[in-house]
Length: 461
Image (tube, rainbow, N blue to C red):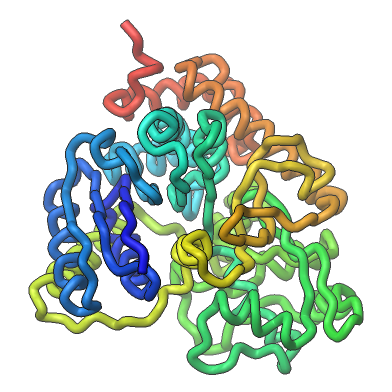
């Protein structure tokens, strides 16, 4: 049995910690050790700590649970580091999301691309870079497991500082493929109660469904698919031509449901199926989220407001507190996140496949080397190897390369505190089309000033 030290940067995340920590406690080969939680949100991080102490008793584990103010202390001699942090949390995110609205820029999710995603990135990238610099000194053999958004920029910043530290970025958005395939291939319907990762990486191959996923975070595509040796991309295209969406006739609109209207529209146009949800996809094309289509409402996409997100966090915190107090029973069912699959494999468990954000070492052949891309990868106790994925087809590759250029500019601007480069990055992003070009500098400055507290590099004295 293993004893590990796990440091969690953002350990007060009410959205992430219940599911991720439940998965950690379900790893049989880990008996205990230390879990160090770092988060400025005192109420939330102490609630999470209390929940984990309750987990110790329920799962017969021996973790020493510590809330640590000094990040370096938490990182020292860590075996694994989880990152779920967001500088400024909902206060800064409110500015990211609401200020661009004044300039005609509407984003339903706002944590990937566009002025909203870029604003979030410049707050987060410097912290990410500093974390790995500290890890190289304090725990160079550790594995960093990141779910922090904006995924591409943050994972790129981690890797810029990494020499020995192994960095892995994870996103569950492409798991939606598991809920879509059976619409085209009924024989591939997920068996009841099967975990999504078990379905994608073990059951589908056993059913002779072989596939390749490739792209950048929240812009990932099914570029190859065979069933029993037959190329089934033509069948997917045929389905897209005969289906506008997959919404039931009597289903009410929901901000978090995906009706696949955007996915199918893009498949009809470009010939390949995106694997992520419509809410993220529309943020890559102004023509999918503008006044003509009700800012994507006509495609079944509804904006998630900061108020809704705050309510969701408050609700999750209450649930954590009730579990900690023994007032609510914990559902000990794996979340389906890939983070603990990787931990378990590194600790000597069974090899696994995963969908990971990693530096491009040639797994996608027509995008820049070292840029962060999202593909399938094979994970063993000895390392992580991306699955060769070939080219991103035609215009899909073109748009991915544009966003990779924007990611690079954003990361450089964030690390150097370069306002002019930041203006250029925002100007290049397609979603900025909602604003007038001569307003982009003003928009940038308003975002910088609103989030000044979390942007010291842009306000050097």
